[in-house]
Length: 157
Picture (cartoon, rainbow, N blue to C red):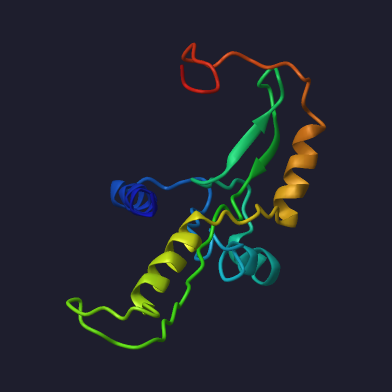
């Protein structure tokens, strides 16, 4: 997506068009880990660099009034998912596959540990920005469930 945004911006420059406003392209790091080094850093410490009349974000959304006449909010994505690295160390007697150790097998223990890590499901954590977004969105909910535009249910059927 970043490449497409840059390409469109460059195409505008190459075309010789003179936009009525500045075009500010802010490609930020850390959108999946809270934006501390990206969007949050820009908005809290360097707002002058991105102060604009209009902002477009490939990862956000716009909440419109039911009649589509005006925007209620334009949202940016501050976090979606993250990763965790693990280092597993196995200690035990060495051996050869033709004569595996009978009392302890470090390879087997590590294999079992990897399965346990793979099967573990971490609890979801809702960051404050998402909690605020959901609370704000709830103010505009009617309780009515609209049909899927393609005629499918929530499972895709």
